[in-house]
Length: 115
Image 1 (cartoon, rainbow, N blue to C red):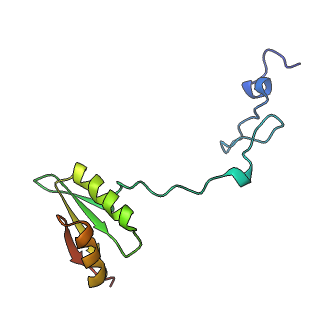
Image 2: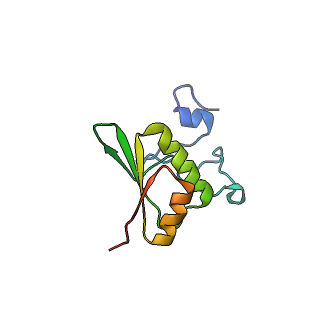
């Protein structure tokens, strides 16, 4: 039996916090089975690389080196359109520029190769 003056960790069997802020292991501490862990979710679709605050309002600046899927480009474009007055996208090669222009017809796309 645990005394009434014992710490919450001792009363609940949850383990005590260490000086690093992590929980110490104890028999009552549950851990997830590694086989049931899901992969890290993708970054939010509406998160941009840069927001440029102009006199007209926020302008989104995004760069796609070729790694975004069609669905990701469209989702980002739609999310940015709801929160900004305009968008500027950069792409490293003319072929990717054409791809972005086809998916985002109202967006300015610039060729911006890596230096």
